[in-house]
Amino acid sequence: MIKESQDVIVKTRARLLTPFIVIYALYVVMHGHHSPGGGFQGGVILAASFVLLAISYGLDKIRQRLSEKAASLLSSLGVFIYAGIGLLCLLLGGKYLDYGSLSKLLSVVPAKARSLGILGVEIGVALAVMAVMCMIVFTIFSSGEEDKESGGGE
Amino acid sequence: MNIFFLIIGMGMCVLVFLCLYRVTFGPNVLNRAAGLSAVGTKTLIILLFMGVIYDRVEMFVDISMVYALLNFLGTLVLAKYIKQSGEVECQL
Image 1: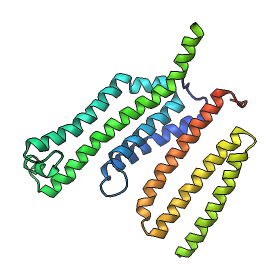
Image 2 (image 1 turned 120 degrees about the horizontal axis):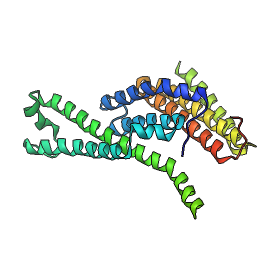
Image 3 (image 1 turned 90 degrees about the vertical axis):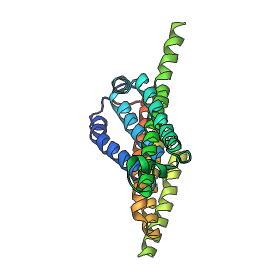
Image 4 (image 1 turned 60 degrees about the vertical axis):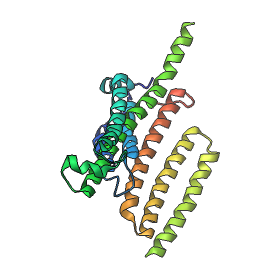
């Protein structure tokens, strides 16, 4: 288990850096169709902010913020947004993930609807990737301690 | 001006190999960790030089910022692992 760090430099730097990391991740998600990045990369950077906090402030405190249940719920919500937008396009008479047909619902021109549709899909991908990455990293961080406890009990 | 950045970038590549020597033959695990961190920082600078040379610096700045973040995180995780594994004596 990752314990809380005793080093004031690491803790202060993590505390000061985390808001900028989150804002940068949101920029990567929002600006994904003009520059390198997108949903997956933005989600990974969002998860990196959680990992930084988990290293410096201990895993227990971060588990209170993002529990296992919330992480699995968020990953399901991300997949739901992705598939839901695709199915919405299907219901509105287009092909699956054909964002142009969203223009009837959003009452904008099809080009604008395509831009908004890809943004919604990327938000869904970012949520799912963030939750799954956090779950993987937290499981890796905590599994060694559980093994040691069960080994000591035998 | 591009020639200038090209020459500086080539010099940075040579410096990466010097750091790689420390990573490979470092007597201590802490030397290796510091060498890895230095290699990451130099890679970031080389990425920015490539952006200047290809005239797409606004794109390469994004990539290099992510690289800096992940390099910092990796070094921190490595330091945490070294401290908890007890391979070297830490003063904390």
